[in-house]
Length: 498
Image (cartoon, rainbow, N blue to C red; front, side):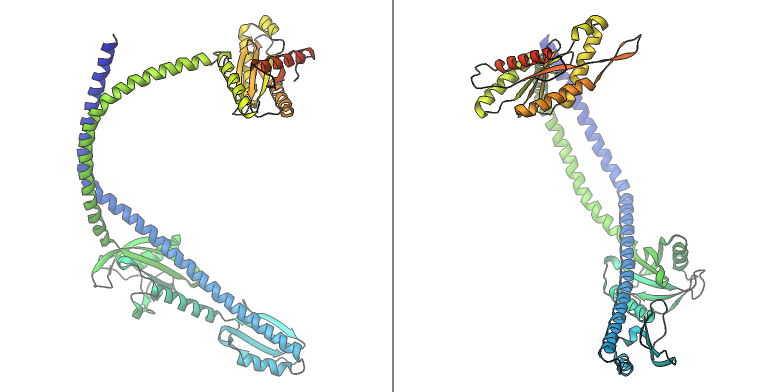
């Protein structure tokens, strides 16, 4: 009988392996054919999306750089303004009598003149002692010394000129592969038309900076890139679009993917583009690598199929051995577990206590042994039946389990009596833990056993604690001491720890 069973397994594995091998070869050949068909499209789409992400991140970084440069020059102007006020304060503190003359000399000779608006007046007769630049009410501050007033503001023209110069220098110095570059157009008329914008910065057409742009301009394919760019930015704040434009290095016409967004402070459209015809070179290189990998995959598939046949026989014997070991382990586990409560039974509990006793002799560390007994359990069985008594046992076990540590062990010692083995507890700490077990059970409620009165049963336990002690020759002497402590808890009125 066993021989026939073994032969059937052999036949099953061999047929199954032959089926898997045939399927794997067919799928590999089909995958090779399909790969050539879809690879170009998928690669193109992937590179296209990567380019879009790169373009957007690069342009957004440039917009942040522009704003940072603007804020830097603004703070620089504020610093100049504050320094000049400080110098004037010192002049007045040093010699108030000659303050007006000395202050005017300082203002005339200041190095901050082109960055600031300055107006120095005598408020008594409103005489203007010195003036420089055009007023800027947004940044102007006024201070007075006696009858003299000084107003200093930051020149917005000075900020703008230096910001634009710094941005231009950064864009000129940046280099990107495949002909990528950044450009900036300043919009004058958001409705479009002739002269709607000025080409402000262009890394590869520097000679054309300052020229006016027209939304009616078209590329070789009839696209209107300026109009598409303007409308996309006006509606959504950003836009992706494609158009045809000549390359800088060889004057060839190529299709570009472009991202543009708005820097609102200057009405600047900041944009960047990449040529898409470079994608095919990527695809060709990837396909060559893919062909090599495909050949390796086919070879590996054939070799692996051969190995699978050999492995099948090995698997058969291993499968039988595992089945035997699993069955034996299952039987062993079932013999160690109490079927009603799901915790360890007394047989395996005895082994735990003997191991703990040996460990105590080696290390001197005794565990705490808690003997737990359900109070008044027999009346529960007598009044409500054994099904209700079983539910009381399971509820009690669950309450104690929820209060245990992972290292603790719960054992059904017999009937309604349980033993909890808790390593590493001192006698003082054991009372606290025992109280925790007792309160957990007391606060738990057994499911309704009386279908007529619809009420739950409250359960309490009495607990006795014991430890290994000098002179013990048997590990169960400590269990007996815990049992005696349990008897004292019963005598003390139950529902307590001793």
